Each structure stands twice: as C-alpha cells, then as structure tokens.
Amino acid sequence: MAFVLILALLVRALSDNAVMLEGVQQQEVNLREQMTQLQHETEQRIVEQRWVDMPALLFTLLNYWQIWFYMGLFFLLFWNMWQSKKMNQHDDSSKQKEEEQEKQVEQVEKVKQEEKVEQEKKVEQKEKVKQEEKVEQEKKVEQKEKLEQEEKLEQEEKVEQEEQEQQDEVDFYRIPWTRFIAERALLKAQGRPSRCQLVEELMSDFLLACRFVWSNSFFPTMRSAIGVGSAFEGWSPREEDTVYRLLVPVEAPRGHLFHLELLDEEEELAKYPRVRVVLKCMCEREQQLGDVLCFLHHPMENLMQNQDPSLLQTLCTDVYLDVEKMVTWFRVQVATIWNTTLQADAYNLKVLPSRRSCKLQLTNTSSGEKILVELLFGVQQGNSDIYLSSQTTEGSFTPSTVWSHSSAVAEKKYFQYLLKKAGENSVIQRCLRFLSHTLVGMGFSNYILKTLVFHLVNIVPLGNWQRRNFLSRLENILQYLLFCLKYKRLVHFFIGNKMMPDEVILPHSFRTATPLNLLQHLEDDPDAESRALRDFRVLRDRFFRLLLFGR
Image (tube, rainbow, N blue to C red; front, side, top):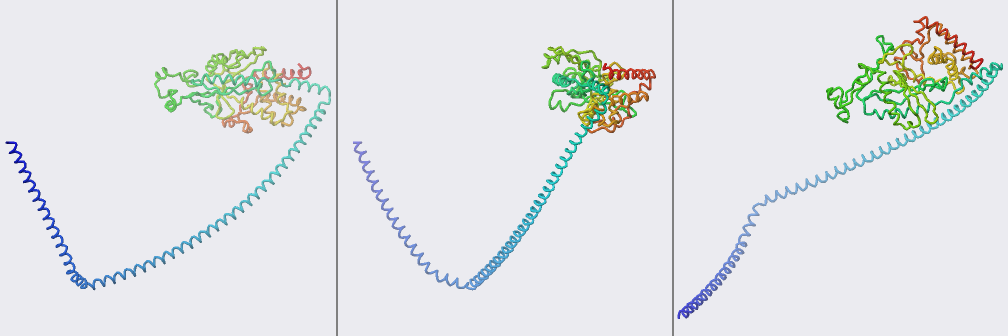
C-alpha cells in the first residue's frame, strides 16, 4: 500500500515537472520574439535619423567656407615654398658637387705634379748615385793601381835591400876571420825550440780548475795567465835553465773591491804601492739570488754562523791584501787542484819554496823532462798593460802588503812591436840572447840588458839591426852600458815615457811620472859603483873571449 502511495507521488511529481518545463520553454520563445522585434525597430529608427541629420550637417559645413578657403590658400603657399626650397637645395648641392669635382681635379693634378717632381728627383738621385758609383769605382781602380804600384815598389825595394844586405854582408865579412867570428856568434845566439806554448796550455787548464774550485768562495778570482819575461819574448839564454814566468791577473771576489794606492803625497808613483780591500754592499744580490749575505748589513754572529769569512779576514793584513798570505794559501791548494786536471797523469807537480810567488816544477812522467814555472800574481791598473805585481823588488826587502809596479806585459807587447817592425832578419833577439848568455853569474840583470836595448833601438834605426850589423850592435850595447855606469844613470823605459806606440797602453800616472833611474844605487853606494865597473871589465873580457874562442 505504501509502495503504491510512493509510486503515485513520484508519477505526480514527474507530471508537474513536465508541465513546468513546457512553461519555461514557451516563455523563452516569447522573449526571443520580443528581442527580435525590438532590434528591428531600433535599426529602423537609426536609418531614419541619419537621413534627417545629413542636410543640417551640410548646411553647417557651408557656413565655414572662409575657413576652408584660407586653409587651402595656406596649403598652396606652403607647397610653393617647399618646392622653392627644394629647388634651391638642388642648386646648392649641384654647386657643391661641382666644387668638389673641381677640388678633386685640382688634387689629382697636384698629386700628378708631385709624382712627376718625385720621379724627376728619383731620376736625379739615380743619376747622382750612378755618378758617385762611377767616381768610387774610378777611385777604387786608382787605389788598386796605386797599391799594386806600391807593392811592386816595395817588392823591388825589398829585393834591392836583400841584395844590398847580402853585398854588405859579403863586404863586411870579406876577411875570413871576421866572417868566422860572426857566423859562430850568430850560431851561439840561435834560438832553440821553445816550450812556451806547452807551459801556457798546462797553466791555462790548471787555473781553469782553480776558478771552478773557488767559484763560490770569497777568495780572489784568478784570470788567464800571461807569459812574460825572456822565455816568452824568445831570448832566454839557456833552455835548460829557463824559468817560465807567468803573470796571473787577480780580481776581487764578490762583495769586495780592490783600491790601488799608487801615488804618494807628492802625486808621484809610490815607492810602496798597496792594494786596499773594501767591502761592497750585496743586499741586491742577496734579495735576487739569495746565495750570499751582505757583509755590511748583517751582524757578525750571523755571518760567522751562515757564511765563509770575507777576504779581509783571510788574506789581508789590516785592510791591505797580503802577498805572502795569498802565496801561502795558493801553494797549499796547488797540489790538490793539480790532481783534478787532465795533465796530472802526464806531469808530476812539485811546489818549490818561495815567499812572494808560486814556483812549480813539472816533471814529465815518461821522459823525465823538467819544466820550471813561476806564477806571479798581479792586479791590473784600469785597462792598461801595467800591473801591481807580487814580484820582489830587487835589492831591498819588500813588506808583505807592498806590491811592486810591473811593466812586464807592456815590455812583452813593445818587444813584439819592435820585432814586427824590424822584420824577419832582425838580430834584436840574437843580441839579447848572446849577451844574456854572457851575463850569467854577473851583477847585471837581464832587465838592465833589455832596457839598454830598448833605449838603443830608439837611437839606432831598426834598419841597422840586420845580420850584417850583428857584431856592431853587440859592441854598441856594451858601449852604452859602460856609458850608463860612468854616469850612474839608466832611465826606466816606460815610467815617464810619453812616446809609446798604440799597441802598448800605459796609465796616465806612468806617462807623467818622473823618470826612474835604475842605477840610483850606484849614486847612493860608492862600493856598488866600483863593483859594477869591475863586473863590466869581466863582462867585456868574457864577451871577447866568447867571440874569439867560442867559450
């Protein structure tokens, strides 16, 4: 029963919903029709209103004709002005283009003119260069012809001179006894094979090893040795007794400077020159490399703990470089360093006693041949050929801090200059060799003999030092020696000499110094004078005996 009641209620509700839905749809249709009718009426009304307002609008516009007229007139004036300005601009641009074209034409013509001028200049320069080349060529041809003529004349003069020398020699030695004496004397003075090159090579390798060992120390730096003395000048008296002397240039180590005290209070060459050692600041090197400590700007305790002592603490007395300390230090190191060289197996080295130089005896291990070498230490004066040397001053005791003036390098250079200028047939070396052999055991040194020859060469022309003049030059040297002994004066050849050739470099102090008398001791000691004259008589007797009897 309840189920039927519920079903009846559902059917009724559905029927009511259907009626309601139909009412809503009918209402929607009515609204659409009303909207369509209203839209149609609105459009009809708008069209009618447009046609009604058009005449009123046209009438309003006609009332403003004056405004339109003036506006048109203004527009016409503006258009006319714009056209006029356009035409003026066109005219201006045309004129500007014409001016630019004219300028371009002028520039082109100017460039062409400049090119033409440059071309003409180049042509002129070429012609000038050709003319100069032609002149230079002609000069070269003339110089070549002149040189050829000079060479030809020199050759002819040389041939004539040789023929004249041969004839003079034949004439001079026409007497058989004279010819025999001269030939025997020349044979006696003939040079023997020298071992200078061998000694220089041995010492060069040895000093190279020394530089390597002491490269990081504060000891003096040894440079390449220079052969000096009679052996290296080619007139050593006897080869078996030859001592090969070499001067070893010494330079200050890093952090040090050498100041040479060369002059005395009167601005003359000091009798006792010394080498003062000064410390130099090494802060810059210390910052850049870091391999040293500056001696000037570090405490002594720090230096003693972290760095080797300076040169002032090792080889100096006070602030002066001590010759004897330096020689002792060098002699102690020699044997050890020599054993590191390549020549140690070929030559045995023995260090000989010496106070101011290092004397070495080298013995060939295969032949037993002995070579005596003396190393002298020297500090160069500027870039000249004069050194302060460790060599002992003759005839007096030399303090250990005193270095003597040495012209050994200058003497060697001057001797080579004389030999080159005198020619191959010169007998300068033979005269020195013959007389030095005669002087052995006498009171006259080889240095006195060489100084005599240097002075005599300036008196007797070099052309008169040929074979034919050999006996005459020997006699001249002895006569000049006797003259100097009688007047007790023989001037040092280099001190105070202002006429040296360019090959020999002397410091200004040497050129302007008061000449030094090498025979001053004869003035001071009468006994020395009598001994010197007695030695000369013995020398003269020995000289004539050597000429006459060959012994």
